[in-house]
Amino acid sequence: MRSADARPVAEGGDGQRARPMLAGDRDGYIARHALWNDRQYAAAGQMRRVIDELGLELIRFSFADQHGVLRGKTLTRDAVPAALRSGVTAPSSLLLKDTSGKTVFPVFAADTGVGVAGFAGAGDVVLVPDPTTFRVLPWAERTGWILCDVRFPTGAAVPFCTRGVLQTRLDALAAAGYELTVGVELEFHVFRSTAGGMSAHHVGRPGAPGLPREVSPVSGGSQLLHEEGLDRLDDLVQLLHRGLTGLDLPLRSLELEFGPNQLELTLHARDAARAADDVMLARAAVRQISRRHGYHATFMSRPAGAETASTGWHLHQSLRDRATGTPAFDPASAEEPLSTLGRRYLGGLLEHARAATVFTTPTVNGYKRYLPFSLAPDRVVWGADNKGAMVRAVGGPTGTRLENRSGEPAANPYLYIASQVVSGMDGLARRLDPGPPVEDPYDARASGLPRSLAEALDALDADPVFTHSLGEEVVSWYAALKRAEFARYLAHVSDWEQREYFDLI
Image (cartoon, one colour):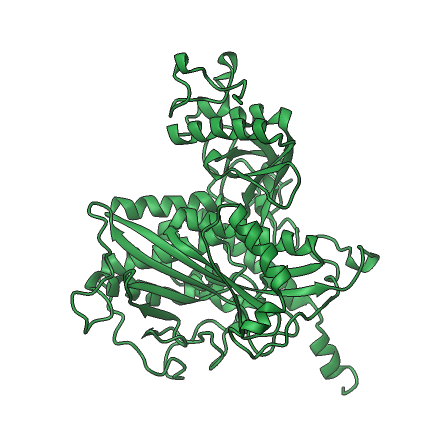
């Protein structure tokens, strides 16, 4: 069935120039500012045909916010053609909020303090859909989904669009002659929901979220990769498999991890930009599918009850030469774990590791994972196939790669990967030497990873490479959001303080 908005063949349709708009409406915002390439126009035409053929009624137009959370609007099918011509507006203040939904910057003041014009008065930004990301959601009836970039009404890029931040760094890497391949290992916790609907104590306000839902365990833990343990969760595993593969995500495995209620999904390696998009969609799918079937999934690294093992995000990365496609990390001889270029890239990862944790581990909770002898790193070291090291060099038939094990699964994928590109490129430019691999990754003499989000922010302030690469306004904006988050954490009277002091002193 042909979409009414697609060009006929005689007018150049059914190819890379097929544009999903009527002749009188081709001068929309997207065309006027030349925001799509031919591939996106072709994908938009295909998207309209799929909507018609499947009878989709609702399309979610979403963007990844600064915390790696999807936000956006759900449009009816009748509104889609206009959205594909001119995008969807949303309040700019969405980019200025902390994880509680509290707006950190004074948007109704003459100077918002973000260092960029366009945010005063919480005015609108434009969500520009990327038709190449379109999916039909397997779990939501007659519903599609599309990922968006964020622009100002003038057509200018919003510097705080994290998808754009990554693309800019990948463009710089491409200009240097390399492309980045990323593989994802994403751990998460799943619990069984025990409560009914919402109640008053679940309701919060910006700066003070309500209490979380009540849950119960689904696995006892301590039995890594236990087949029968995973079989006990087969109903959930089957649901997740159908949902993730139904989205055409490159799912490689679903595994039972070491901790109670802990699972892991892995995705086949692919180019970095697509891998980041995959993470956004995979996390949303896991949470939404789980919720619809009586489970609660969380990518929080160390929820209550996770004393034996926290969850992490192991990010595998490798470079290839753009001109030849040759893997750039493969060593010249079997005696070496990495090529010279790979060592320099690794040197950059280590040099900037403490500052980069703001992006790899952006929550207060994530720093509770950095413990010795815990299957998580706590030192800035690398090892040859050593799972205790922060960075692990891994060889094999698919090529040599570096696995950064410091990230938490809640990290914004665009900023996490961008931080690796920034660090690695500086290592290439300065020919940094990572030194020899360690055999004792928890050696107390090695430099430690930050012990808190505040310490990581101080490390970011002291490392100019991120400001130079990402821009002062981006680093200042993100640091302000995270400092506000940490300040709220410090101001909160915890149950630990109450139990420790209330009766004693």
